[in-house]
Image (cartoon, rainbow, N blue to C red; front, side):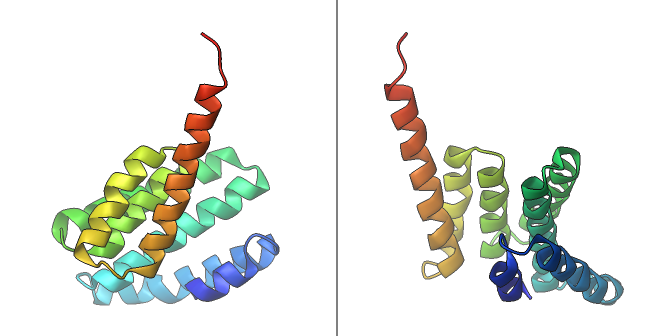
Amino acid sequence: MQTEFFELFPSDLDGAEANVTRTLDLLDPVLPLHPNDWYLQNVRAYTFKNYAMVMRNRGKAKEFDRALQEAGRMFEIIREQKPDDPGAWNGLGSVALLQGDPARALTYIDRALEILPDYPEAKHDRAIAVQMLKQKEGNGANRRP
């Protein structure tokens, strides 16, 4: 469903939000039966991150913050319980990117790539973080003291 989300987002926010709802509707009854299934836990955390992106694009700052905080908490819990989970590390990086902190994001994303060097999503997120850092540096260089 993650692939479907990104086929819809950002051009079809209604469809992307419906995808988030369907994903949570499928996950929520199953998760209590499999509390240590880290894949399912990651999917749920990424779904909240996706919801945050929809809310950001809809201009709903409180809902964006709330969803992003929930995603971050879930990724942190996974990372604490399974420190070698690259999805949790990259998820924390994704959250940091959405919070506008590419330097912190790189720390998490690089750890995900140490664990799983060929992780395509982490490579993609790393490129975004590096680009954001370059933009910040460029903006800082143009300022006068």
